[in-house]
Every structure is written in structure tokens, then in C-alpha cells.
Amino acid sequence: MMAGASLAYAQKDADSPRKAGGHPGAPRMGQWQEGGFMLGDRLNLTEKQKARIKEIRTEEMAKMKEIRDNAQVRIEAVLTARQKTELKKLREEARTRMQETMEKRQRRNIESQTE
Image (cartoon, rainbow, N blue to C red; front, top):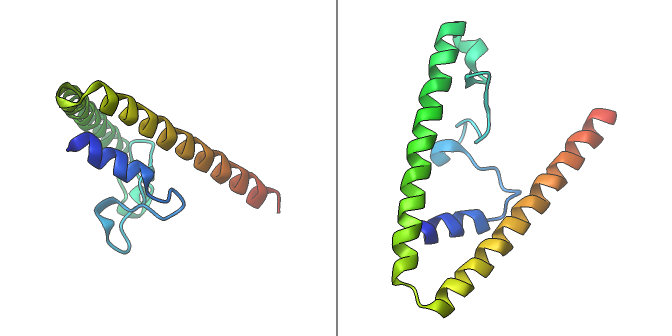
């Protein structure tokens, strides 16, 4: 189920604003910079706080990766060879779409900076 959920999430329209927590005003994913939210300046985080937040995020991301990897192995263990092949294809398609979206965003960012 975890791999399916991850795949479904990756297949969503990558141009839609993804927000942590999914509620209006929530920081968008990827808005962590220098160990703290971009809002860190508004919160007056110290360098020590930013460093600690970065450590926490790094630790938690490693734990989440381990959970995802473990779930993926367990899920694949119940799939047939044909299903595994199809899952691999779906993942490659999702990866390609994500790459295309990232390239599109980079082009937009470059264009907006040159205007």
C-alpha cells in the first residue's frame, strides 16, 4: 500500500502546489533552507536552532526512507513477475514526468529572473 500511495502521489500533477499538511498557508514542500523554514527569519531562529532543525529533518528523512524501502520490498514480495514488471514501468513513467516537471520549473525560474 505504501508504494502504491507513493506512486499515486508522484503521479499527481506535479505543477499543482504541494503543501506540507495540505492546508492553505502551509509551507510548500522544499521550502526548507539553511536548516529552517524560509519563515525562519520571521521566527527569528538562531543559527543553533536552524542547525538543530536541519539535523532533525535529516534524521526523520532517513527514517522515512527506511520505512518506504522496507514497505517496497514487502509489497514486491507479494506481486507476480508480471505485476513487478508493470510496477517498474509505472515508476519509470512517474520518474520521467517528475524530471520533466523539474526541468519546466527550472526554465520558468530562469525566464522569470531574466525579465
